[in-house]
Length: 254
Image (spheres, rainbow, N blue to C red):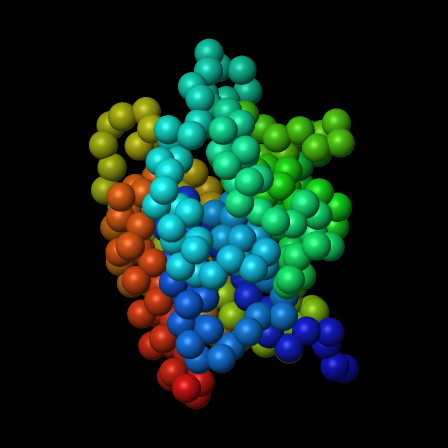
């Protein structure tokens, strides 16, 4: 049975490591590979939304480089999380031309975790910005995002690689994974301990979705970068670009 879309692209979570998605999309453009459908989680949701909105991979790189993610969050006396993302949400809202999923140039699926009911939820219609922010709200670190009287957190909590979200709709699915199975070294500091905890949780739900990909791109040494290392944006972008070029050319694209 013929499927609705020819090429789908699934973008994992990974914090600033998600910039490898933009580099991979640059390589795809150079090889004339155009996604007909995109799915994203957390950082992949941000990159996917911007790309589907018409921003070039280089534009996305510049957007990430122009801000320090943690400086665009505000520390709180813990009330559902240590930080809220209001400033980042305003910044992203100004970048996005589309207000709703239906306004995007490329159809998009965003995965967030329904924190009240304990399950993954896929957003693909209606308001765009809120689901993107919800999908990026790492629990405990960031305050959950309220959408229609329910609270949502990072989609990576239950599905950090949203391949199954689009598998049945696409002839070919290219998966870009910015969350490696290898755990980096860490320091005995509260942020490092928290991020390492999330790393172990998020990676545990990636394997099943990896198996659903027709083409998988996993940049080497992506684990050398922590989630918020924005000063390494160019390096991370280049890792994604080179990894995608290599894999896609091996698959016969040129």
